[in-house]
Length: 263
Image (cartoon, rainbow, N blue to C red; front, side, top):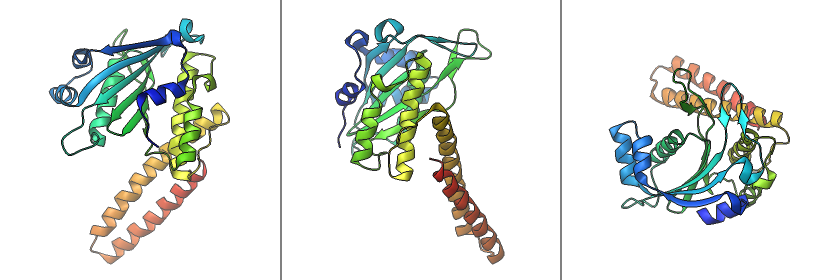
């Protein structure tokens, strides 16, 4: 299943009143989202085009804004960034794409639904924002990015179809822009869970979605620990130490299986 930006945007079902459809000069990202010389080179060399697709505000989608001591969600921006195809590659390197997504999220003061397009692949990412603790008026990322590559992270066409139905604006919570944004984030995490379980299932409640978030974090942590133990055991020369590492690996794999059961 091949995806493109227009197809994905159509699946969101956004009202015409929130569409912006304006090209954003790359210069703005270079000036506001590139803290290092390496980041400036990355943007200059790999970003082909930035499109501001839509601005979701209370007066354009009928969902109230959100304010508390930690954050202020007055609007949600939908952005599409097209990357240049590199010689001999049909898409950007994962590390480069992840860094670019982070730079875009950091550069925009609003929460962003970001589509990063590279060749035939599209990465969808989201990240919560909060007030910076030490700088008045400055917004920073609150936690890491939640991202999925489409369609690679779907275990099959059925899961992909189910996910595409789940992202529709009409199916998101409408109590506030924060709840709406979290609804999209929960949908992406459901797809990441489906990659491990083989079947897509949307969360039935915010409590279930929160439990899945925790289980996904545990799976990522335990998979990294299992990889570390395997590598260490492969290099170990002493038999007793090999046995010890393999026993530790079995314990981690049992914990990983238990975490996957929570997905």
